[in-house]
Image (cartoon, rainbow, N blue to C red; front, side, top):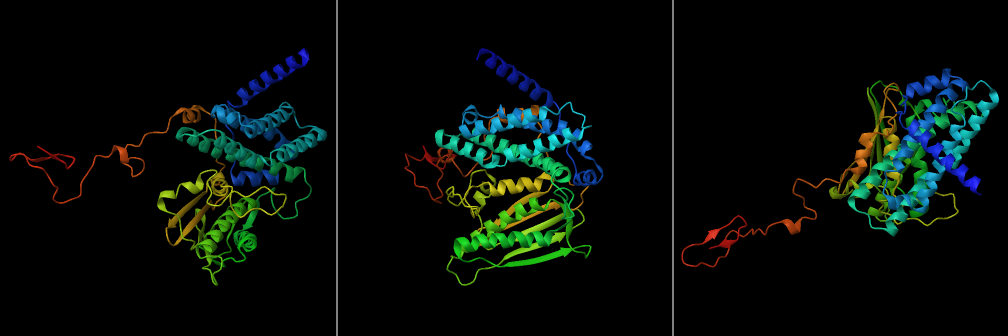
Amino acid sequence: MRIYRLLCRQARVLMEERLDYYSQFNPSPLSMQQFTDFGVNATNTDSFLFLRKELPVRLANIMKEFHLLPEKLLHMPSMCAVRDLYRMSFKDLLEFENGTGSKTTSLDKFTDALIKIRNRHKDVVMTMAQGVMELKEAHSINANTEANIQYFLDRFYMNRISIRMLINQHTILFGEGVNTQNHIGCIDPHCDVVRVIEDAYSNARFLCDQYYLASPELVLKYHNVDKTPVSVVYVPSHLYHMLFELFKNAMRAVVEYHSPGADVFPPVEVLLVMGQEDLTIKLCDQGGGIPRSQMDLPFNYMYSTAPQPAVSGLDTPPLAGYGYGLPLSRLYARYFHGDLMLTSCEGYGTDAIIFLKALSSEANELLPVYNKTCQRQYSTPVQTHDWSSQMHSAMFIRPFSTNSKPKAQQVGSNTILNRDCTVTQ
């Protein structure tokens, strides 16, 4: 038993040393063009030599940020489970850090290890969400803690997206049989954007019909400055994820705003435009809109206007309720330096706009980096507003009268109006 404890202690020390070592390096962002060129020209060995170093670097950069989170969150059971998963995956990758990739058996073993890591982390999004919910149920959360969690989750999920992208590219190209869809790994060099829009709408409409027995129609307009069909080098599953989430939100808003029993619903309108620099997808609904004071809330993790759905054994996804849909969709858009934005007219509807890079050479990965700037972000308190605010400031406002003729009690002839519009003598 004593020897076992000693070995475990030595293993933990070695793990921390390797984490410190790999976290010194910045991850190497790749462009969409580099992904496609690498997929066409590179060999299994080339991919192995790159990933055996790059994956530990990306893992180490985010694992070091775990230590900067609030202690209360780190002790939540689900959070401990996520940290254990990352430690196991980092340890698995360390077995290959000195490999040369000269033997087919070692390459096959590496590919199997990547598939194992990917499967191990398939439920990490919801496990992390559960950890945050456990914290909220057990402790009160102040503004600093909430800001730090929001900052971390953006970086954590973006890191996860990037790691899965690398793993998927390698396993599809070198480990999961012949690709019959003319894709380069998980990238479609001629992604048919209209088809992805229609697929996302169709599946979201199916869900909406299940929940409300009604759904709005789709009106699709598209324009290409080159007068050719709209296509782009992109990951279809990423684009589908964004569109499916936006369609779900739009349909739910339209049906609930106009009541499920309405005979006719205004359609969800989509405008698709291919420009010289950006591909823009604008989705417009007439679902009543969002108050301007609440426009930041949809991108906050765990914010949802729908009740949280109960966990069930059904494969059918819920229409709404977890609050992670929009924040994750924005991360998918930003991953290759695009974006996702919301604008709204309260009382009418909401416009959601997806921007994607039109040129694959400009679509570079956006990756979190562990450095001193990142560390300061966790230690810097939320700044006090230096502008007057309508919220939470009533106790600090001096009384002010809007009466044109304030009443005053005169003593003799000395009555003076002070800065607070009260009468002094």
